[in-house]
View 1 (cartoon, helix red, strand yellow):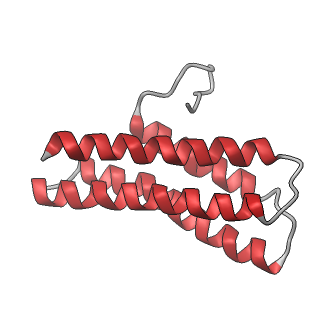
View 2 (cartoon, one colour):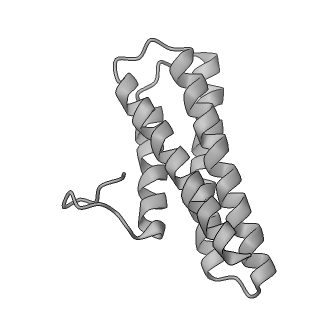
View 3 (tube, one colour):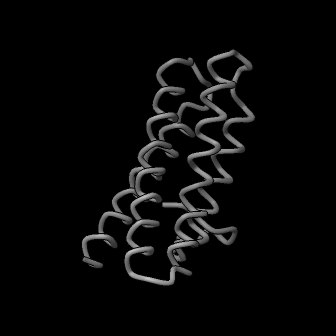
Length: 122
């Protein structure tokens, strides 16, 4: 689970998704500058940012249909983020491999949270 600056668990999902995107960006900066890492890094930066952006849009949705669509996009982007992070993890010999594992875990936890919200919203 993501921690806030005072080391308490982040239960605010808007803040948690922001911290996830921020952590991904800081992680990507540490990657060796190979062609694959640059391209994979771009992909994971986009998908991780989209998780929180779409969650925020869901919270401001004008209809239930719009809410459900945005939540599905957030879930999809979390799943995609986990994919790119795993690909980076398995194609590099990183000193900070634990960071990658933690980010993959967070992406998967966010995906499960969005799935739960979607199931309860139907």
